[in-house]
Image 1 (cartoon, protein in one colour):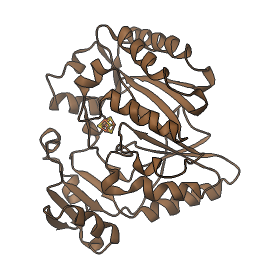
Image 2: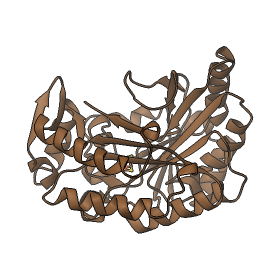
Image 3: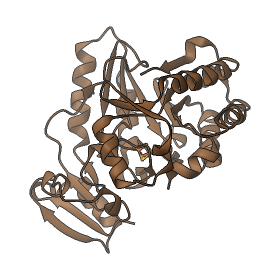
Image 4: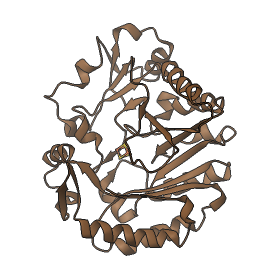
Length: 330
Ligand code: SF4
């Protein structure tokens, strides 16, 4: 799957680099200075690169964890996110990464221990507070697990911190690192879900809804807490019926005791990202919807947005208590 691997010169001997490169013996290896030399140049085509992304193995030096944007809506008083990878195996047309990065190549930061030191430092500086850490903001948390061993390395680490919560945001079915160990009481495996009629059009390469539901079932059976993320809600004719069926399908087997939270939010993108993505995919039907530009963001027209949120909120609150519900309004 990986044909080219760029490796930062100073980490060539890093054990994680050796382990990962050994998995791809046929891949072309190119040594580079800093990953930005490959990842940041402007004259790159994200859409073309997405067909065959290279893997860039790099070291991160700062900003291991960042505070979540204000009004993130879910989590505790103190919320942080972190990304061991930039970019994703999947190709969702609404994904903001296409607008944020010049390159579709995957950057994997191999110095996990430095991320962990930073996370530990934050937890120790607020010993009386629960601190939530979100993974899967600039990537999918689990999609590349067989290559990265991320969950395998970070789950025991998070288990050793008394006040840290971890949310693994994913669409992936790569859950073996989780089902092969005892569940962590302060870890939420949060799946993004869309109706089949929508996912088939805009979530290229991601596992089907059925496979994601199957992964959720298995995790739940193993005792893991589940999060459900109906975000972004995507508009198309007949969306009410499609989301109604989706909720029916999901809540037919969800055990409420193991359901940590459900969040809901409509499609939205920062304006600059939207412009870039629209230029990459000018014929994409997603962007032919009734969109509105407001306060630097692009989303559905206010009335439509409110109608969708209201409809889905009413449906969801028929299944779950309001304390587990986290709507995200623009
Ligand atoms: S799964 Fe998430 S990170 Fe990956 S392409 Fe889709 S929206 Fe982007």
